[in-house]
Length: 223
Image 1: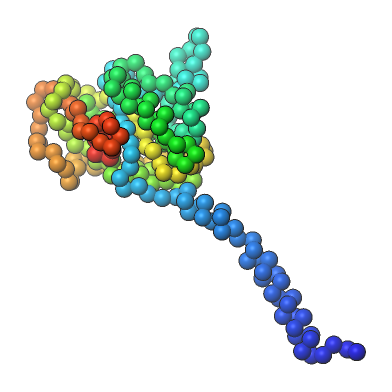
Image 2 (image 1 turned 135 degrees about the vertical axis):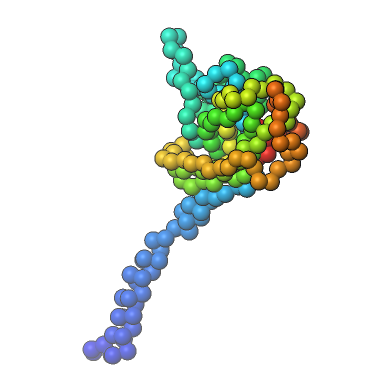
C-alpha cells in the first residue's frame, strides 16, 4: 500500500526537524557561560601598587635567572598558577613593606578561581595612581585610573619618576595568553578626598588599613 499524503507530510516534517535539532544542539550552554564569565569589569578592584624609587623595575622573572644572568623584568602578564607566582621576584630598592605585601597578595590568590594581572607602570615620585576599574576579556586586560598628589607625610622627590607595578586580582580564572592590554587616565583626579593642592619639598603616603590588612595601595584608592 502506498503511503498516504498525511504520512508523507509527516515524514517531511521530521526530516526538517532533524537538521534543525542538530544545529541547535551545536551550541554549548556551558561554553557560552564560560565565555561570558571570562569577560567582565570590576569597578572596585583589589590591587597592590608597589613602587621602586631606586630602580627601573619592581618585579623580576626568577625563572629566567641563572648563575651568570640577572633576572629579567616582568612585563604585562597573567599569572595563573601558584608555581608561576613563586617565580616572581621583587627587585632591590622596593621597601620591605611592599615586598611583604606583594608576596602575601600572590600567595593568598586562589588560582583555581582567580587570576593576577601584572602591569609595569611609572609615576612621579610625589604622585599616586587611583584605580577606578579593571576590565578583562580573553587575552586582554584594561584599567582606568587618575593621578593625584600623595599626602605630605614621608619623603619623595619632585620632578622624579619612580618604577611602579600594578598587580590586579581578577575574579576569574583566565589562561595565561595575553595578546593586548590598555589603560586610560587623567590628571588630576576629578573626585578625591585629598585636601591639599600642593606639597612642599618631600611627601609620600603611608596609607590606611583595608580589608587586606595593608595600606590603601591594596585597593583602587591608593599609591
